[in-house]
Structure formats: structure tokens, C-alpha cells
Image (cartoon, rainbow, N blue to C red; front, top):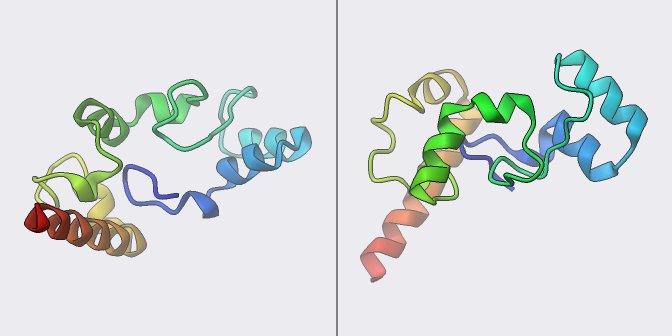
Length: 111
């Protein structure tokens, strides 16, 4: 699963801890990252289990408002100021979102 900003959820410690449903691992992760102890993550578009970090995320908010999976499905990508800080600092997110954007453009062209 790819987050709104292009992070691979399968590599996220909080997502992994939530998926394992292991209270000890989840407690360790939330303490390490300073999250609410009841935090869990089923992906950043899941509004029922949103943790404090996701509630503050402007990228997640934008994708939710536009009803898109991630920034790669936005017409403004990659020239959007909201995603720019992540795009400029995370090569893996940039690559993932660019790949997602290419899929989006292909779907647009096929319609």
C-alpha cells in the first residue's frame, strides 16, 4: 500500500505494528515516535484509525479532499507546494509517486 505522500506503508513501523496487532510492538513504536499510545495505522486514507501524526498531515488532507489515492493521481503533481518538501527529500517517495503519476496519465489517455 502506498501512502498519500508516496511512502511504502509496508515499511512503516506504525503500520507494521498495527498489522501485527501486537500491543508491545505498537507501544514501543508509539513511544519511539511520540505518538498517542492508542495510535494505530491502517493506511493514511483510513479515517477511522487515524493517528495524531496523520491528522496533522497536509498531504493526507489534500488527497482526502480530492478523493485520490496519493499525490501521483493529482493533475498538479509534481509542481504542488504541498508535496514538494517530501518530493525533494525522499527519493523513494519521488520514484513511487512518479510511477503512480505515469499510471494516472496512462489511464487519462485511455479514457
